[in-house]
Image (cartoon, rainbow, N blue to C red):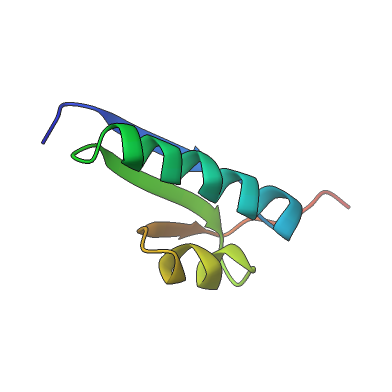
Length: 66
């Protein structure tokens, strides 16, 4: 482990997920040994797209305000 650990959160739409993945890819390019973890909303798009890109993700029970 390089000692660097990154937590990335963002999702719900591709307009948030794909830029977040681009950031993670650049971190991985510059620091191949860094730990990168995503956090997203359970049942949303990021729960499929992030693992498909090769990153772990933890889902949280998130909802909007009424």
